[in-house]
Image (cartoon, rainbow, N blue to C red):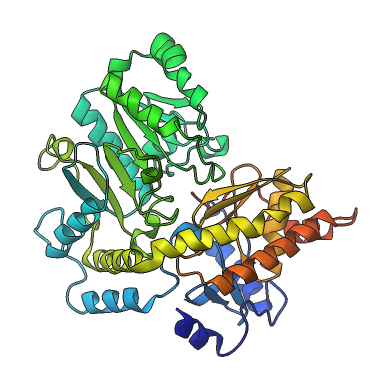
Length: 457
């Protein structure tokens, strides 16, 4: 993406801030936005993007930012990758929409095959269903699991984020505020502790012994690496133990790879790194480089257990989104997954010294590939670091209670990583050395960037 970035930057360095941030046009737009849009949208900070190429984003005031948030881990091939843009334009010139829910759309079946062939599913033979978003795929998996097993209950995990629609938010347990005011939620949902091998005892000691029998549990849904919950990587043996529990009791294992998949962790799917094959795998976010597409890949016998009319979508798997997905997969297999591994190793090495320099402020650095989380001592410090980075032209995004995620596009270069690590270190140092009157905190609060609500999954 070097040439694309240079076209947008025009020889300018990235980042390059030509006004205060946010600038006057951005501030005016925020006022306009807040007049017309739903206040339910939890904006992380006041950036108003108008153009993007690669990891470079230009805002409405002409400021250039280095994007290490990627639209919440969505723009996997960078902003406006020419191959993806070309595929979108070509398909849009041929056919924009023809509902695959009711008719035989060629590119829909091709996309299903391509994604299914890339997905390790228990039992080997897989089929796929396409929708518009991650939350839709979670909803589809709940329906499929209950229909196929004839069992009512689903187990998710504390710290999990699966979406905001009713079924998905019922499974979500990363923040209580996501449930506030919306009850009653979907019945038959239980939440297990996440991440440690010893936590697996909860299933026998608590769930199956005291709450519901194992033969009434349809599925266990798990993010192989928790996303919004803080980029939490489980202990080795945890996912393997879940697979064993499912096998022992006839429970389906659903891997929610909506954020961790599509090459982000250095393998196509994060769960591959533990050698575990789920019965159902969910994808969205980065699988189509920003076009609205979700995929549910499942054991063929599960999908064959329900018939016509059991589930569908008017727009799901529309031709333009499918074309973007096929181009994205070509790029992932063509070197971007390998780049995610290499740049992830570079990032972990570069972030590591923060633990020694700021031992009371920076508590942990974790992740796989380009799914990296930095844990701070307080939620306030995490938000202040996010704001300080924004003020320096680096886009990162808070997650969990007190973490900041770095999730750049998989096209990130070695040089861009060096720049981002330098700015992030400067931002952390600014918070560590901040004087008692806390000007960074006050500036962030004044810009409504300290709301304590994550932007999204």
